[in-house]
Structures are given as C-alpha cells and as structure tokens.
Image (cartoon, rainbow, N blue to C red; front, side):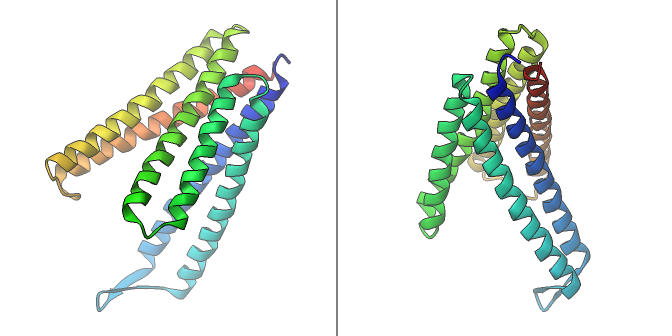
Amino acid sequence: MKYPNAFKGVKKIWIAEILMLIVAVLGIVSVFVIAANSVVIDDVLAIDAGAADAVGFITLGTAIIALIAFFLNLLGLIVARQDEESFRTALYVTLVGVVTSVISAIWSTNVILVRWMDVITTLCNLFASYYVLTGIASLANTYPDTETRDLALKSRTWLMGTFCATAIMKIILSIFNIQSGTTFATILGIVGLVLEIVSYILYLRALNRGKNMLER
C-alpha cells in the first residue's frame, strides 16, 4: 500500500458521504410521513400524534447520523492530508465553513450576515469536495491509474459546472422576477436537481474508485 494515510482518509470521507445520503433519504421519508398524516384545519396544519412521534424520531436519528458524518469527514481529511497536500487544503476550507456556520447560528437574527455566511459556507463545501477530487487525481497519477484520475477530474468538472449552472438559474429567476411555482421556474428547478444528482453520483463513484485504488 503506497499511501496508507490517504486510503484511511478517503475511506472515511466516502463513508461520511454515504451517511449523508442516508440523511437525505430520511429527510424525504419524513416529508412523506408528514404529507400522508396531516390535515389543514382552520388554516392550521394538524399532524397525527403517532406520525409526529415518528417524524421526531427520524429527525433525531438524522441529526445523529449527520453529526457522525461530519466528524468522519473531518477525521478523514486530517488523516489523508499526510499523504497529499490537496487534502490539507480541503481540511482548511472545511474548517472555514465550520466557522461561518457557527457565526450564522450565533447571529441568526442578522439576515444580511446570515446570507453572506451561508454563501461562504456553500462555497467552502464546494471547494472542499473540489480539493478532495484533486487529491485523488494527483495520487492516481503516481500509480498510474488513468481511469481513476479521469473519473476524479470528470467529477470535479461536473461539480463546478453544476454549481455555476445552478447559480445562473437563480440569477435568471431573480432578474426576471420569476415566481416559484411557475412552469419555467419548475423546469429550471428540475434541471438543477438532475445536475446535482448526476454530480453527486460521480463524486461518490470517484471516492469509491479512489478508495479501491489506494487500497492496492
């Protein structure tokens, strides 16, 4: 094994992403449970007591899993940085994102500050993934493993492209004052969602491929 630290780190990052995928699925399940067990009475949403308990349990489980995923991802970056500098950069960017998230939570009543902190946090998450993929591609060059390198670079391109496309779509909606719920806004939303799903699948594949390569 050429890069034991990178292998251990990327494996942890991959597990963290799988856990976050579970979090997303649980969130969707929670929405369906609420929709199937709620009624509107006098403009007030009423939820069945049993369903409310189930949603509360799912929410608690989701929070615990998300917390575990966060620390696994952080630990993975800390370990992997010993073998490749790109993981070190990803770690620093991630820590900046943590700081902005904390600032946003503390000063939650300051709408303008929260918006700016959310933008910075989003960018930090984006570039953390970018540098993780860069690290995998760099290590793949030393084997050499062109398939893993090309997949990592392809995933990186999709990641940045999806972010830019989503930002452009939001700008278009804002400039032309297109309200959510309209046909055009719905189409843009679906396109954005499809791009994000493809980008995420490629990211998971690149992590898994990188993990398997580093195990050799």
